[in-house]
Length: 602
Ligand code: GTP
Ligand code: SPV
Ligand code: MN
Image (tube, rainbow, N blue to C red; front, side, top):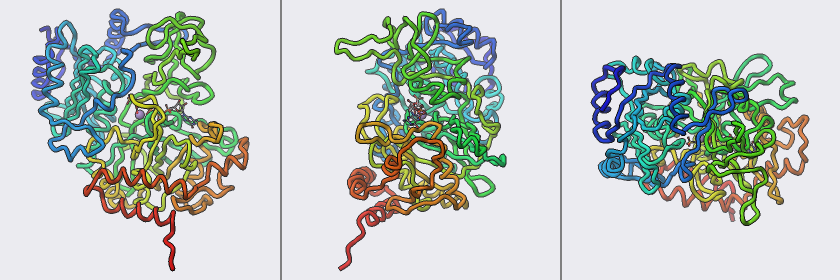
């Protein structure tokens, strides 16, 4: 085996772990990633040579590349994702579990010799600013150039990370092998007791970029519980008012439910006129810690955005469009023969000729045998772009300790039921609101689209331990932070009887955020309902927005008889946690039940 001449580390445990993995996977070569520009150019050229990358038109898309993943490898595969804790109870009823020995054995069998003829890259990476006590270091071994080039955008990589790690620093051991991309052998395994992740048989997104969902959520949520903080599937944004004062909000929505869009929100004219500006701190993951001022602070551990392409255009998300103009990797969109990329509900006309996300020749308007239009881009096609390129990036996005949070928002995709916005009565009720939330399934994970499933705190696929303990930890955090954020729930996706969205969404969502921030300051008119405080009929600033009073009424409507039905779903879900469920969650459930159906007194 040809070992990299410039092995950069003097960390004995790191080196012996790499030796062990190399012995298993048997790569021809080991190459350490240093994070330099020279390295980037070299690896991109190599990826073009192997066919993993297609270089896009350099005038229209400078520094951009196209990649198509295997057609059965286009979204996270939750059924193949496991928490390998020592005891099954510690993974809880919502996670797949496998004994650690079995995980190592099964994945090891697939990894054995799988890197013959390939290069194993060593990627030292930091989630959070390099060297900060708020950050965590990982080292990913991978045989995928695509993964290397994505990790270089999504995380801080290379020499500075090894320097921060020193000779004996802690790091998460991340082993990733494509093997033969066979879905029947695919396994995404987390070993919280060993601070390790093994991923085999996938080369895409959250399955393969191990710093993201695997480390920054599943492993980090375990660390966070031990160390007294929270690792969450949340965007972070700042809202600056006309005095120049900025308040920060985090929001947890399930995958493909609007985090990137909200994080990059552009104020509608009427609110711009009031002096509001919105700043992006993060679009997918937040680490929240108690600050010395008694508030909860949030930081974005990532360095780039891995965003959904379809639906992104200059009207819905102009800042995302500006962000992806250069130095961006596009995955599974349409590839034009003119070296362009395009996706459904994107900007402008599609190219006259191209290849769809499966590599088949594609022309606009093409239909399948049943006469249905053939999409050019996979619904979960994505862009990978540096966060620094976002025009609305906050000047505080790289503050190691993050920003102080005024409001936490939970939200889902619900055609019916959930009103546009409501406020919880207090922290414990807010934790209940998060724990009982549900959303319709999207294309970001393999499974039946549109099916309503319970997705507490948008963490169902990402919490690395028993969620009953996780709810308990959330309750505990409320007690540990003297001045915690207020907790809200939003739903941009309520539909009318014709199946049309009632709320225009996107930039207009700032009208809701304005009410939320008002409520945090004890302002903002509200009406009390059984589920929480909903804006009073005239409380949202709707200046310049064409929306009928009837639509607004429907958006804010809370119908006890519908919620009564919802209770069954919540109860069934909570019961899955047996004795482990904190009593407080059941008290909250009973309280909601009696608010919906006040007991009749004789
Ligand atoms: P992940 O990256 O998978 O975690 O997704 P995300 O939560 O960041 O979702 P994203 O912002 O990428 O939005 C997903 C889809 O929802 C896109 O097709 C958007 O166009 C659409 N969307 C986002 N915000 C809104 C909104 O306010 N209203 C409506 N109707 N659609 C929205
Ligand atoms: C999500 O699915 O929530 C994503 C994309 O952000 S992935 O990185 O694939 O998890
Ligand atoms: Mn996400």
